[in-house]
Length: 193
Image 1 (cartoon, rainbow, N blue to C red):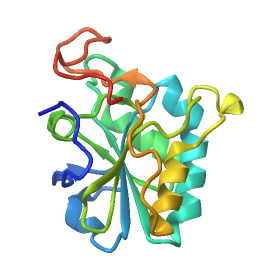
Image 2: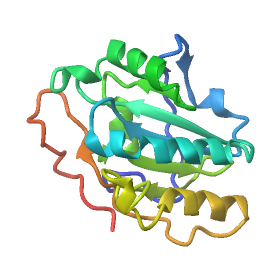
Image 3: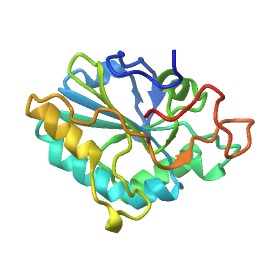
Image 4: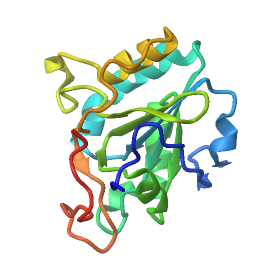
């Protein structure tokens, strides 16, 4: 078994605190026809560079029953700006259209096999994985973007089509694992394609 969830796998459940003061699990998203779970953070230049594109996707597909959940699993010991107070501050400033939760134990990053920030996981109505990988091909500088893989996957799903490219490699900083060098990756983690 690979580190990252495989296509067709079920979404692992979780119970994580959010910046809005609530605690969320998969059941909070039962009404979503499609659920986008993505690993993100406060500081990564690939996240910061593509957040507005992610916002546009979340806004564009909201009326189609798509919900977004951002998970910050980065170690605050490795990168202090990724602690919960900074998450609350960032959401207060940016008002992103998604729930933003903290995975302080990093158990959920391991359960999903999050590799980088950002790393997207798209689940259908049965919460089976139908797309995973990058959002766009140039997340650090979206002025150079030539393809929005996340948008395309969501468009395919909503139209009832099989996702044309269901697997891409996420592009970004690696998740900051507690107790490890900032560039460390679990030995079983690897490129998806």
